[in-house]
Image 1 (cartoon, rainbow, N blue to C red):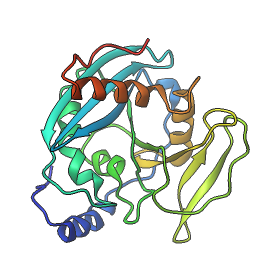
Image 2 (cartoon, rainbow, N blue to C red):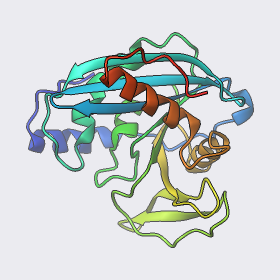
Image 3 (cartoon, rainbow, N blue to C red):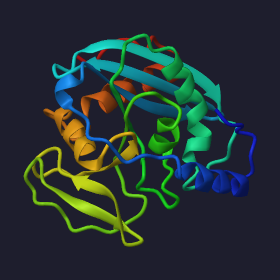
Length: 226
C-alpha cells in the first residue's frame, strides 16, 4: 500500500497513476461464489470505523464480521474519499479469515472523475474482484431506469460507460454500480442484484453499515441484523 501522507494535489496525481492498473474484467461466475463481503465506514470527529461483513452466497447469512478503527488523517475533499477511508478499510479486510470471492464496497469504482473511486482503489490491493455500489451519483449522466426491479441503464461520463444505474427494488431509487477491479460490469450488476433480495441496498452493505455504526458506538460489531 502506498503512503497516505499526501496533499490533495498529490493524491489526485496518484489516482491518475493508479487508474491505469484497473482491469474491467473478466466475467465472474456467480455459481463459483461461496462468500461475498461488504465493506463500509462510519466516521465521527477524527476517526474512521470500518467494518467488513462476510456473507455466505447465495443464502446471504452472515459468517464473519471484522472491524478496524483508524484516525482520519486526510481532509474531506470530494473525489478523494479513498484517502480518508482506505486505511481503516484495509485494516478491517486484513483481519478477514473467510475465503472471500468478491467484495462489494459502499463506494464508487470507475464511476469517478479519475476512474479511481474507493472500490477501485482498494480493488488494486486485494486478490478478489471488487465492485462499487454507491447510493448516489458522483459523475455521469443517464436515463432513468424502468421502475421494475432489475431494470438498469448505462451511466456515461466523458463519452465512456463508467457504470450502471440499477433498480434493486421496484419503485425505489436506484443504486450506482461500477467496476472496482477484476470484474466486468455485467457481472458486477448481477452480483449486486443477487445480494439484494429484499431491500434497496445489498445485504453486504446493510450488514457492514450496521456493524460500522455499532463499532463507532463502542459496541461489538459482530451482531447480525437477522
